Amino acid sequence: MKNILLITLFLFITNCIFSQTSIYPDSVGTKVFYENGYTYQAERLGSGIIKVYNSDNKWINIAKIHKLTGDFPDENTPDLESNEWYKQTENLYSILEESYSNEEKEKIKRVGRKGIGFVELFINPETGKVDDVRFSFFRLSYYMYIPVSKFREIELKIKERLQFEVTDYGKELNYIYDFHNYNFE
Image 1: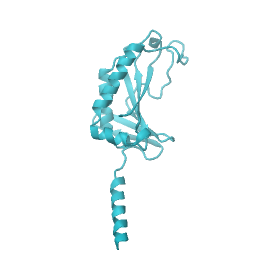
Image 2 (image 1 turned 45 degrees about the horizontal axis):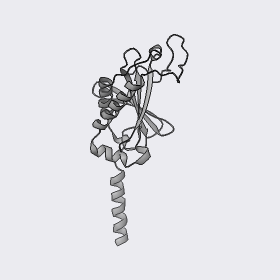
Image 3 (image 1 turned 135 degrees about the vertical axis):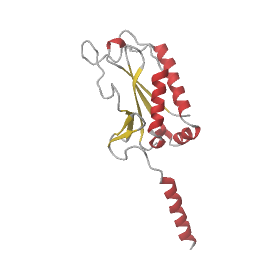
Image 4 (image 1 turned 180 degrees about the vertical axis):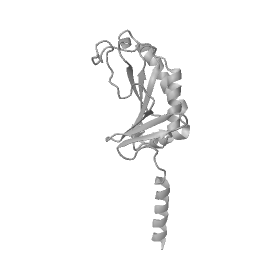
């Protein structure tokens, strides 16, 4: 009798633990979210990475090229001023830190290496402002349960508060790509 009771209790607890469903695609493909005045897409890649971004974007999935020649840029030539880049990177991490609750941060940290998130910035070379933002994370991370509205909130803060200084070479490109990974320690 004790064994039956323990097994029943174990199954009930297991069901409660795993009953929370993810928001994002469980299999390879794209899911579209129609929210309050904006539309987001979530793509699940074969590797298990989920990419989340605003559907109303300009540069995501467009090749980065030199505007005059149409050639791919020299990735060894700086396109952003390094001192300003460090400042803006700190601003980015501050935005991420303030945007997640302590409870969310703890849940993200518990996953270990799978708790790393990624932010891709697509920067306007004429203004130094961020045009597009794409978030990526592993499908086994707690980010699977973060609502699209949170990513929208972070996107708007990034676009409002980050301002990069573009080099002369960077101004010759159609956009500037900047990639960051983050986790909460």
